Length: 195
Picture (cartoon, rainbow, N blue to C red):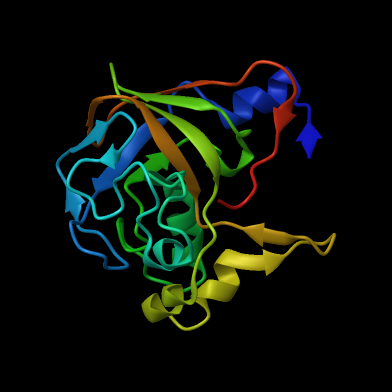
């Protein structure tokens, strides 16, 4: 599926004030990740010290299917505005609870096309590969949360709100408060699909 965006829409996706709200990592395969003062991204691997880092898939269900599959889920990002919306719906979801590595504020992650490059601060850079396909473990954080994060749109299509996945293109540290800059891919843009 491909789509085009106007310059006004692109400015809404990529405002000048986009920032990192928090960062998280965990060396064990747990659903939630503790927040940290900083994380280090390693080219081609992911978040240093995180259980999901690796050139090939690290998520347990994917390893069971085919452990040689390339890891397109090295870094998980969620927009903080989602947590704000969930709080309004009565769900208390703190940074790191949904297993994200980077919580952003001020950027429409779900509206970015596949292949978008995201740079943090002065160095670390990732490329968006697709949407996170959330699992039923999300309901451990609150009954009905999974239905809130995966629903059907007015057109009948499944809408996934649990963030995006990426691979690391350039090493660097990422800390809360870091500026976020975005470079859209050249040519026709492709909508994000689950990875």
